[in-house]
Amino acid sequence: MTERQFVKTSLEDRVAVITIDHPPVNALNEATISELNAALDEALASPAVKAVVLTGGGQMAFVAGADIHEFSKLSTLAEAQAVSRQVQSVFAKIECAPKPFIAAINGVALGGGLELAMACHMRIIGDRAKVGQPEINLGIIPGWGGTQRLARLVGKAKAVELILTGDSVTAQEAYRLNLVNKVVPGGEVLKTARDLARKIAGKGALATRAALEAITLGLDQPLDGGLALEAQKFGEVVVSNDAREGAAAFLQKRQPVFKDN
Image (cartoon, rainbow, N blue to C red; front, side):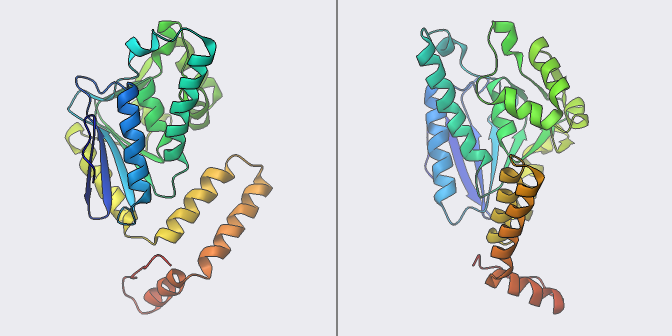
């Protein structure tokens, strides 16, 4: 995969690992976001990639937030809104991706870092990491999806509390709030995320994509609409060759060999 200055990528066992590597705390500046966007496009376009792990370089931070120096230079309403929408569109690529994205939160994930992690489909966090939306302490609010995704994950009341106080929470509290899927020792974060990604990569890509679409798009609809979408996606995969292979493998008591068609 392509080598970049601030975003490193690797591929093994059908799992791509995208690493934000912008020392000392992996802050998201314009250049890093641009490289991340390109890395996302590459991973999404590659048929060799079945799942993606997103993590931070070093031991201190997943992503400690946005580059404050760049934020302080925004001088007009139109300019600020354009930056917000631009980064939101990058993060939306992750949330709406047909391949699962797993955030391996190996250190602090604050502000834009938590917003990036929340765009992923699943989150694994180190036991000493902390997460939060501290933008209020700078006189601003989250602008890259934090006000929307945090409320959807932890509920309105807790999201209001965390955003209005700017408080961070421990990994254990994040798990209790259903903000993360699993807490593991710090040294095992990337391995755990890769193992999970590898397990999912062994499933059929058609079914994985259909499930992600049904869940992600269905949540934005009333229940009846979500059920109709589920029926549509169910029908699409049931008539596939992969579905026939899955049924045959089950009856023959062997592992299925999916060909993603």
